[in-house]
Structures are given as C-alpha cells and as structure tokens.
Length: 231
Image (cartoon, rainbow, N blue to C red; front, side, top):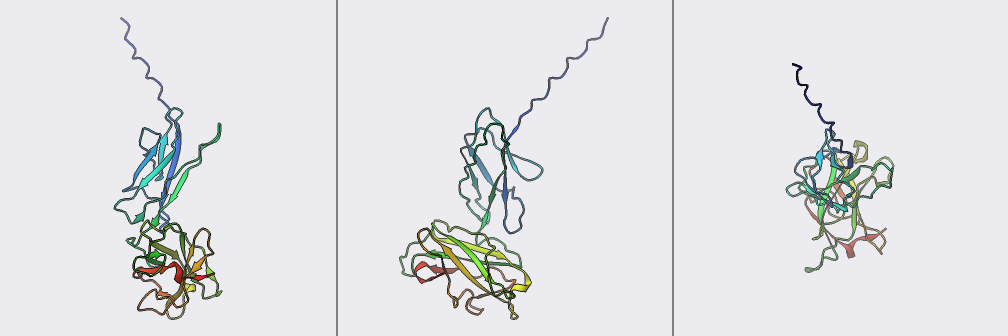
C-alpha cells in the first residue's frame, strides 16, 4: 500500500509595504517608537514596527491614508501636526514619511544644548491673547565669527502660546565667561521677523541677552509681540 503524501503547503501570502513612517527626536536624532499612539485615516490595520524603528503599513487593496495622526500623551513632545502623505503615482515607489517631534519644556535636555521655554503673547497686558500662528527659532552668536547661527529647528507655539526652542552648539561659540549670547526670532505671516532685544533677561543669574552654557533649560520667559524688535 502506497503511503499518503502530505499535500504541499500553500505559497505564503505576500503583502507589500504601503507606507513607512519614521518619528524622530531632533535632539538625540534617534527614532522614537515607544509611547506613541498612531492612527491612519482610511486604513483598517494598525502599523507594524520594523527592526529599524519605522512604523510600516501594509497594502489594503487600493486604500491610501488620507491623514496620519500621532499622539504623544505623557511624552515630553508637542503634538505634531496632522500628516497628509502624498499618494505615489502608478509605478512610483512610495517615499518614507518623516515626522520630527518638537520637545516641550518637560524634555530632559542634555548638556551642550541651549534651550529656552516660555509663552508668546500679543502684549504684556493682563488679558493679552496668546499667539499660536507663528514660528520661533533660537539663534546664538558665534564667538569666532560674530555672526548669528541660524541652523536651528523652527517650532510653533501650542494653542495657549507655550513654546520651547532649542539649539545644539559647539564649545567654540561661547564667551570666555561661559555665557552664550542668544536671541529668539519670531516669524509671523504678514509681518517682518522680530526678535528679542539685546538686553532681554533670559536668566536671572546670567547677563542680559545671555544664557549659561551646559545648563538645564532656563526658567520660562514671556515674549510679547509688540515688545520685540524688527529685524
């Protein structure tokens, strides 16, 4: 009697990658994978986390995510804007999407990073409304070139005007007394850029217009749009 041969296993079902997303910490420049809540409108399944730390969605027929939302509750980052990935054309390989998070004042900045948190208001009046439709960046004066360094990330205030700007710098940019001359530049649609003045008191224990190198983020500051100087 001939032995029964087992039926061959069906071929594995191949599912192609639809879209990959990396979420990056701008200070450490590493990919963030823990504590996030990610959802894609228009897709049924949740993303997978691959070995390189990217979130990956697999194809679901002809579906494409209209938008991607990332929740950061409990993490020291501001909620990023909704991402609307562009759908590739036929035959085009989808490009990985990228979200760079913005640290808040709760972020544990390491030494070698300049950081200032605060709130942006229209004025210093008691009932002055916050400004949220703007971008801010932290500049520091390079002690070797006497020029403002502008290689910093631009951030947008939260709904209540709170912000946290930061910049990485090198040891040759500070003064001999360990202070770094800085300014915050604010950009607003329909207006020329404005910045903090030369004598702005960033830290009580430091000279006006300066913050101390290798120090934790300074105490929150209040920026009033009508008190900033035009550039």
